[in-house]
Image (cartoon, rainbow, N blue to C red; front, side):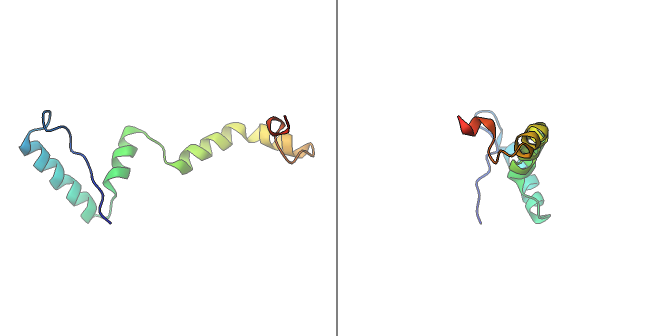
Length: 79
């Protein structure tokens, strides 16, 4: 699978820096890492799984209460 990975604007990144970044990224790939995933992780962008776990944890009590009252759907779905 081939994926594009931006190294930065040509106006902002020198050729030498771009070559160094490309070398670093190729070494990540050789180690079996996904450079795009690693960039997102460094930026603090959660994966879908992590985001879903946070939402479920935040609403767990509400969901439990709604379902334990015999409602098979949350209140907002009934309106």
